[in-house]
Image (tube, rainbow, N blue to C red):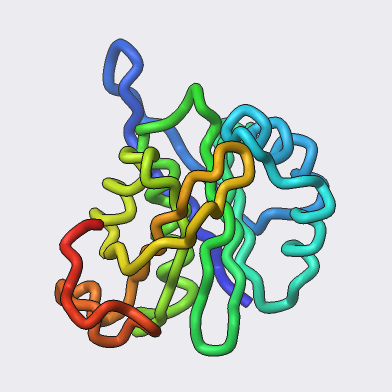
Length: 183
């Protein structure tokens, strides 16, 4: 269904050193490592059954990021009719802000095509993730009330479409009529 190339990123750890990040298809055998990262990343982590369900979908894009043979991140993206929904993305909390999440999301972009419409939900309190998504062309286009079960926090709905890449929400389903810079 898709090719997952090896990406080379530079990590800073005292001194500049080249490190190879492999992005490949996520498989059932990865789930123990995925669950470990998931539990360290989210107050209400996905269950094993949720990951199994998403991995079972033929049209889903499920990717793993490996660093030196160790799984360090993953992304789950499902197709719904003519749009893609980034359902879950996470990087090991000890290895964040090194470009791994960006690499995973950009690999999804390369698989869905340049004119694809993508959406995701994010906690408004997760400013780091929101900034990343904005840098990748997502714009805020509404909220889901009391979306997060642990504290009742709303979710910010973000979209990446041909229009959001131009700075508008013209092609976003059910979007407000006025462009939103960042919600």
